[in-house]
Length: 196
Image 1 (tube, rainbow, N blue to C red):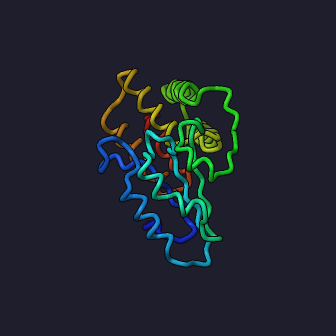
Image 2: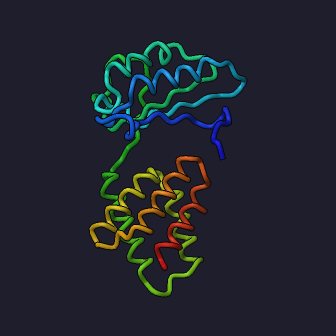
């Protein structure tokens, strides 16, 4: 799967391999803008997962300003941040802010969910139907599946059950989700592996 269909969302996030500081680089923004130059009848959605200044520094954000201010008609930018005050003000001024209530800190919720799931999977009689139900609940959760998988990794490490094969399966699942694989089957396969 090459993930190059023009209607697939484009996700812009820090490139941890190329950026020592874990930020979105100007080069990444320029590559994105280059892709958006090509006219298409398709609707394009660009998700900037971490829009706070610590992840999207001023020089990278400034590269986006004109395009965000006057995007082509078929382009929609979605910027995600936990706090609008942490986003460059010139970017915020060009955006419509939508607040999503979050009564439980996501990190706590993910960690609790991961712990409950690992307890369920540790029972010897976990069957495929139970795994399928758990996977469906996780896939339907409004929280990020990648964040859940990170919490699952941390939980395994804390419990000293972070076997290389388990961690490799979690990474494989993350990659499948980033490649827009259907979440439920990807999670089912991972949970089945962890239950064995």
